[in-house]
Image 1 (cartoon, rainbow, N blue to C red):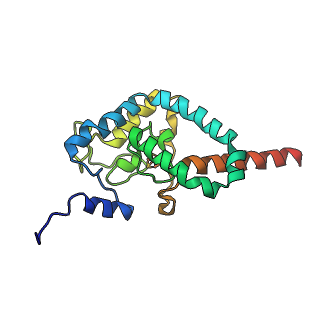
Image 2 (cartoon, helix red, strand yellow):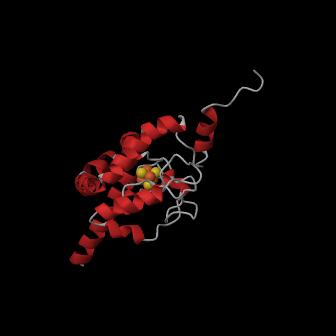
Image 3 (cartoon, rainbow, N blue to C red):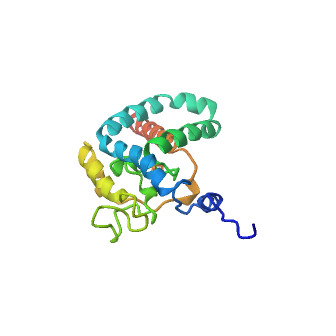
Length: 192
Ligand code: SF4
């Protein structure tokens, strides 16, 4: 028993540090489950783009409510929902600064090297990852997904490095708070 294998506890510990870890299941099972849904989301990137715009607007309309309750207070339940919804659809890693709209609905945090601005030089001839050979390269998928989107050219925008202090926080709330602040500033400018 002394040499007991760490099993899935080791990846969980590693994930807590912010480092990339494959989902805690075997590659084959992941290929059947997560990859299938993730790839489906990329194939339907145009629909998700359309849906996200409406969803973001609805969230912004609710800004007075979030403000009344307190953004700090709603952070936990919204993060819980965001983690589960986006985890199921995109295999989201909760980086807290979502780039899906700029990456063809393919989450860049699933890249084992966590590259946010395109693929490394190791993409295999079949379009799979060099680190996880059973996984389609998230950046090859990102390019495909972006080609279906009306705002697909956003993939050419340079993404900032990941701010690790935002991990496990809600992108939805952050984007909403920022949009609300921008709207207020514009209103003030017009009144001035
Ligand atoms: S970019 Fe970040 S927030 Fe968006 S799906 Fe990927 S890990 Fe989640």
